Image 1 (cartoon, rainbow, N blue to C red):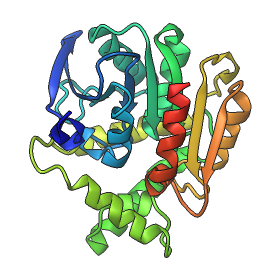
Image 2 (image 1 turned 60 degrees about the horizontal axis):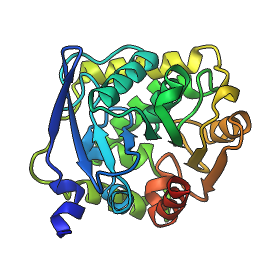
Image 3 (image 1 turned 45 degrees about the vertical axis):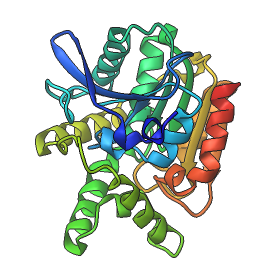
Image 4 (image 1 turned 180 degrees about the horizontal axis):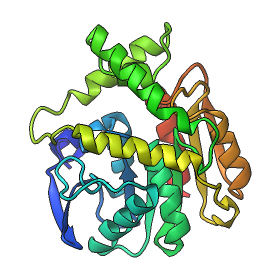
Length: 281
């Protein structure tokens, strides 16, 4: 294979239409086997995936990233609930012709993944939940205040808000944050438009509603599940990862030290082998 095929930022953007919505997606890796569908974070587009996670997983698995309805190059308007976002993700997966997939959900994407597996259990083989929390998770409702504070901090310091939201502001976190942001800048062509303010606010409200909603019965999840986070997540409290681990039967939990919401990006060299081992079992 050429390096071009191994480079996420050279992956072309394709579209598939379902229920009148055109979903933008990219794919990499071998076309055989169960695909791994990546579900992105709040305000994120396909351009926000860390190539250090996408590329090594795509070396072994068929990886598909996409933008949900109303985000990036996908048409329509952003749904105001996690459940509706999960239905859209299921619609997208089925439109591509897949009856079974693995899900990799980060942050908001991990909430969508939980909702999807509960609503469409037959569609999911394995589940990776990173930097996320369950419906009714204590502290999730504070996300609007935390996010706006860090967007303001980013504006005032001319830094990407993700440097504050995803990483600790210490000697380990600051260089990890800069390295992560620089990796995202590797794509220079074929970029998606950033999320619009209204769509971003709708996503924030959906997350807040998720945090305030009744807790779901995660005990019905029979799919093998890997849960990962940093030990100091300011966006979705790290304790919620332990909570999901207790409630999802047979699930595995990895907590990275001295790291925050973006722990899997800070420790991508440790997380990727764990994810590959889990997916390859």
